[in-house]
Structures are given as C-alpha cells and as structure tokens.
Image 1 (cartoon, helix red, strand yellow):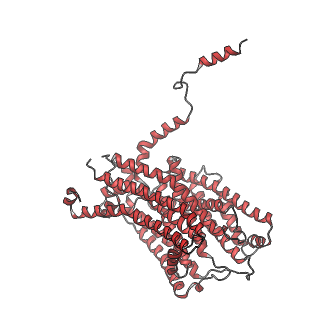
Image 2 (tube, chains in turn purple, yellow):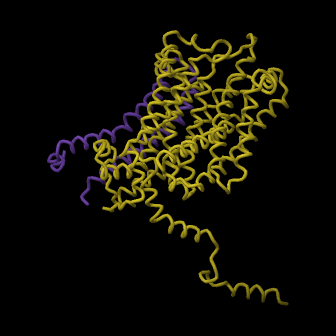
Image 3 (cartoon, each protein chain N blue to C red):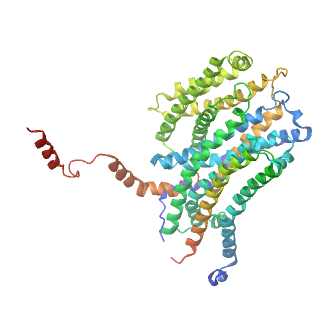
Length: 87
Length: 461
C-alpha cells in the first residue's frame, strides 16, 4: 500500500479495498465460468462421452469469455489506476 | 481534470433518487404482493413437486418454458437495440439506451430462473454444474445466456460510471455505494479514453452474442425431431420475435417512467415515433417468418406435422393462435401505419398487444407440439394450474420490482450522454452529415480539365 493510501481516512481505505475487489471480480466470475467449461471438457474426455461436442462448443465459448474478461480487466483497472494519478 | 457542469434542467433525472413519493410506495406494495403470490406458488410446488402444476406426459413443458423463451426474448430489447443504436450513431438513442439495457439485465435473471423453477427440484442444478453434457442444447443455452448476462451487465455498468460519479459528488444518500461503484472516476482524458474504447469494443462484441443467445434458445426446439419444431428457420424466427417483443416491452417501460418521473422533456413523441416505426418493420418481418414457417410445414404435408398445424389453425389451440396473429400483426398494422400525429397512444396500444401476442406465440410453439407427439403416446392436453399462474405473476413482479429499485439508486436516463449530446452531439452530427454529402462547388477540388482535354484531342481525327 502506498504512503498516500496509508494516510487516507479508514472509509477511503475501505472504498479503495472495494475498488480492488471490483477489479478482481472478472477473474473470479468469468474465470469461474471458464474453469467450469474446462471441467465439462475434462469430464467428457474421461467418460468418452461426446468429446467432439464438448470441445466444439468450448472452442467458441471460451474465447468469448476470455474477450469479455480482457475488456473488463482493461477498463476496470484502467479507470481505477487513472483515478489515482495526480491531476 | 474535466469539470462536469450539470445543466440545471437535468436535476429532474436525480429526483427519483433524492425523493420518494407515495406513488413509489404504492408501486412497491403492489409488486411485493405479486412477488408474494409467486413465492406462495413456488413453495406449494416445492413441497408437492411438479404434480402441483398442469405439467404431465406428454406435455412436460408448459408455462415455465414458455416464460423462459418469452423473457429471454424480451431481453433483446436492451443490449442489442442499444448497441445497434450506438453503433449507427443514432442521436435519438441518448435517453433510450439506459432503460433498454436495464431491461436486459433484469429480465435475463428472471428468464434463467424459469428453468430452475421448471426443474421442480432446484438441487438438480448441481448435476448440470458437475455432470453437464455439451451434447444437450440446454447446456448450450446455459453457456450462451451466461455470456449474454455477463456482457449485458458490463454494457450496462460501463456507461453508468460517469453518472455514478455525478451521484457521488451531488448526493449524500448512498454515498458509500456510489464512491465504490464510481471506481474513482474523475473524468480525466485518460479515463474517458479507456471508457470510450471499452464501450466501443463491447457494442461490437455484444451484438453477435445477443443474436447467438436467441438462436441457441431456438436450438432447444429445432434440434429435436418433433413436428413443427425441427425447422431450419427457427433461429432467425426466434431472433426476430425477440427483438419485436423487446421493443414492445421497452416502449411500455419508457412510457411508465416518463409519466411517473416526469421525463416528458427527455422522452419526446419523436422517440416513440421512431420506435413505433421499428416496431412496424419488426411486425412485418415477424409475419413473414411466421408465414414461411407454416408454409413450409403445409407444403411438406407430413402427417405428424399436419396434426400440429391443424391443432393451431382450427383445433384446440385456435383461440391462442388467432389471438397471436391479431396481437402481433393486425393490431400493430392498424396502430402503427400512421404515426405523424399523436404517436404515443398508438405506439403504447400496439406495444401492449405485441407483448401479449409474443407470449402467446411462445406458448403456441411449445405446447401444441408436445400435445401431438410424433411417438405413439396418447394425445395430451395442458391446463395450467394456479401454481403456474402464480409463478408467472411472481416472475413479472420480480422483474418490475428489480427495475423499480434500480431507478431508486441510479438515473434511468444517462445524464452524461444527454450532456454530451447537448454540448458535442449537435456539432458532431453537423460535421458527420457534411462528411456524407458530396463536396459542393465552393469546397470541391478543381476539376481535372487537362485529362479531359487530352481525351478530347485523342478522339479528334
């Protein structure tokens, strides 16, 4: 934590903490969906159960979720960091 | 740091957050009653199982799947329409987009919940998470709806950040919430650049996702070999129907909040005229797709398909079918063909009938096919019980309640986009229109006389 942030009032520090939580949400939420899709591929491979469908659908779904996560990380962290720069 | 100077006229957009009138409490009480009725119905079903509903073999899908398709369709009002309007730089979009985007997020939650209700035992959802099979179009649905909900929530939140910062700086109510959600927004050039870039990316990404969602919803039906479901045009047919019902729902929401929050100077008759014209186009498209769908079935003349076909045209489902045609085509045609004078009552009438008609359309797709199965089951009939009506009422209540509560925390019209429209939009549009037009004589580059002269010389013998 920077010296400026440490000197901030407790409520400001709480706000900063929540900003970081929001910044991490895409990784937790969208990352969770990607892990779930990967789990379904693994299950289908393990059980030899329509692997082609699992891989085919996932090839479309996973890049979409990765794109969404990238955009979100870019915009959330970009705004948070730009807001902390001295004016 | 860019200083945001709010136009005093725009203070009215903050009034619903600052003040709470008697109307809000009446609306809240009404909606809570609806939600309570839905909760009682759900508890009854939870305790007694799906036997409390009218669902049975062979009609195992009824109100819940109808509602699922209907609500997911309504969700197309928001993000898709908003993205198209932004992408095409339609200036009249500014007071419309936020309301549309909110509909999407709220209604997707309610639509997804219908499947949970239809499961009967909600714990069975864990099986989908743990052992889901991608062979099933239902799981494709779950994946595409997750993507759409995520994209729509992001697409709603990003343009709200500058407005949340305005609320943070101008209100004392919920200040901590606004400070958190504003993400330290100060309106610096760098922040503006990042936000604009992200909104641009999202509006391109969200359109194919939205189209894919309702196409995938149609796959739940068209991937089967059931009569009148196994159709190649179901994808675009569902998307057209979704946009159609979505615009209808958006117009109703806009008119309710226009009246309740005194937004007449923002939501003008011209907005309803344009949306009414869109509605007219969608009505014609819907009619064409419906005609094409039934024509191909009739032309094929397969006996199993004809049973379903005639059950809709002249049989048990004739009332629902012809009411659907009336609501989705005849009444909109009568209301929307001339919108120059006093468009609001006509557009509202058409929208109400369209929303009812599109619900009937979803019902007409789901139930008659299951009542006339291809396999040698006995014929089925379906009569929803009070439990299904209760859950339908509750679902509508939950949607409206979420929407109402949203308007108590956030402005329902984007303040910064209106501000941008006032200060930059007019000039930008003038510049853009000039750039579309051919150059006039004053600004045109000098005519290329020399090559013409050379060419003239070449033809002279």
